[in-house]
Amino acid sequence: MNVGSILLWGFVATLALTTIQSGAQALKLTRMSLPLMLGTMFTGDWERARVWGFGIHFVNGWLFSLVYALVFQSWGHASWWTGGLLGIGHGLFILVVLVPLLPSVHPRMATETRQPAATALLEPPGALAMNYGVRTPLVTLLGHIVYGVILGAFYVIGG
View 1 (cartoon, helix red, strand yellow):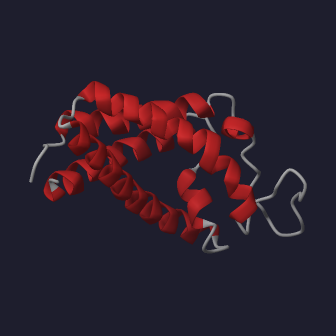
View 2 (cartoon, one colour):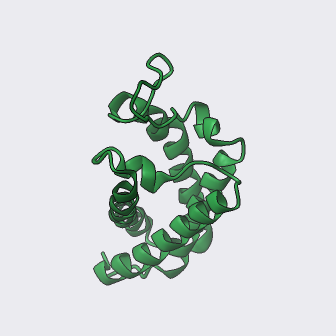
């Protein structure tokens, strides 16, 4: 396994994914902010939560790049299109499994049955995170496809 390649291209891929998601939010294509969602799990200060969330998101990006590298190593090759396919699976996993689980474990997120109280809570994401906008699944998939394409195109097999 090529640790240097994982560190470099995992960082670049996560930077691209985060830029796509943040840009889409700035352009009002989605209201979902993964850094805010992640950060508010650890602090109620929303400004600090964004900083914590970006850090957590980058660490997660590096950890996922390790998974991609393990897949590429097991296949004996990496390419932009295999990375893109992994990105589709990764994005679908985020949308279908992880994001819907958040209200169950997130201390500052409302659920479908526990609505916001006197303290500010994040809105639950709903199916495919569409409570944050109907384009949210597309933005999420696009970001993860780009993430996978970068890793697949530039990851160097071996050590």
